[in-house]
Length: 257
Image (cartoon, rainbow, N blue to C red):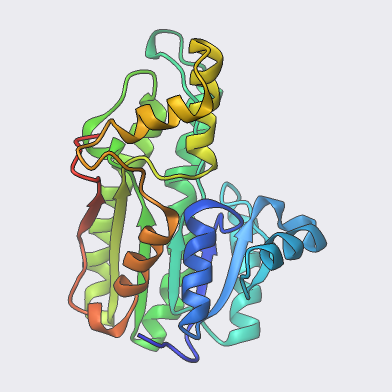
């Protein structure tokens, strides 16, 4: 699935699934640019990438800002002449019960996870349309299908990605543009670490015991690894996947959550 001369953008790519996907695409010969809120400190970002063995460009990107998105995409197009692949993994998470859910917590997750993805797609689609080829992968979640108490904003934002993806698929179909989403269960990332840390504090259990509890929550009794998501993403953005669009791929280890 080598894709020499293809250009990819990975949002939120300095950790977790985004980082794994950037690494995987780089091995396929793709020119990868990572957009991240931490991109303002270019030296620190390059050090993170070097430690992870990732060959990629990195630049500041705040998907909550239309101006930031336009500047970021414009820079990539100026350097590479277009954008072939967009991987939207930038996301935030914060728990809150509906009955006392602060507007700010709701707004930040919707604006980042859903509206931010929309802004990125809106910015790159004209370039994909001109090229007659494009691949868009949105990172949703099993939470988009099943919900979870105290996570209304997160679940709503991820469910919104499924509807957005269907519209993008229809509008892009005649121009060689596909759009799919990936909906993982628990993946061993920084976000899962936040859950584990909270459970350790609440229960007094050891880290190993809490991690085992999460692994045991699905029939396979294992946590999904970022590299597993990256392998799926690499296939979905390849020429071999040209007819796969408007789909959501649940990487759920056999669980409903």
